[in-house]
Length: 295
Image 1 (cartoon, helix red, strand yellow):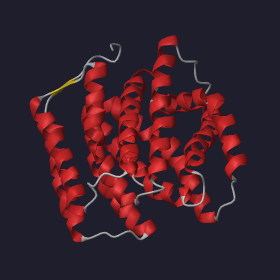
Image 2 (spheres, one colour):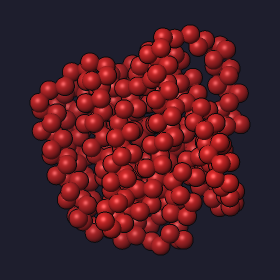
Image 3 (tube, helix red, strand yellow):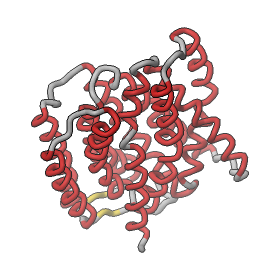
Image 4 (cartoon, one colour):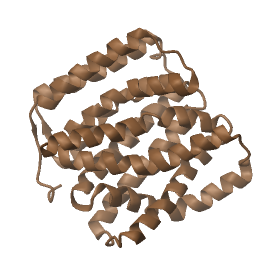
């Protein structure tokens, strides 16, 4: 198995873990304050991160790495959880899954602009086609009608794409586990007092189901999933492995149907097959990558 193939498989595991984020977030925010869920999940994951960094005796990041970690933290530790949690208070997880379907294109764009990856014309055609299929699915389902929550979801996409690209590049020199762990620890001094205040103000009384949802997004979505995802991006490239995210909306739709009982029909699988075909085409298209030490 070559490095790109290994990167694609690791990325797929990460996407499978991330695909259940919206259903479990919706369960949590039904009873807990959405901002509390968004920031609290980072605090929980930061505790695990600190223990992991201590256990492996991880070296402290360099000055340049701290800067990249700050961007990563802003995107995936704060931005995406915050905007997606707010959105899940108002729209179904299946709706959010479709809007976030444009994330692979956004990730490739950030990777190209920030780090000099140069996808070929064929790759961009595949990426645009895949995103077009996802948007077409949203329109066909009636999910294309803009809601205030859609604006939050679009903001979540931008934040996640920025964090994915920055963290994926940094993983080439630090390793995926250390990237997300340091990004979480970096956010801890700010997020901990805010989370405590939110819990005191809005309360933390909720059902076991809500706390299970919170536990999933804290431990898996915010922590474990990134081990696979960032390692995959580092091995296979931000633009190429990022296309695996095209499968995430359909995995989320399946998760929403199983966990939340949201509607799922046969047409969803036809769209999923079309997306898989596009991912296969995009994987074969040429991408020029810079050496890990350059930015």
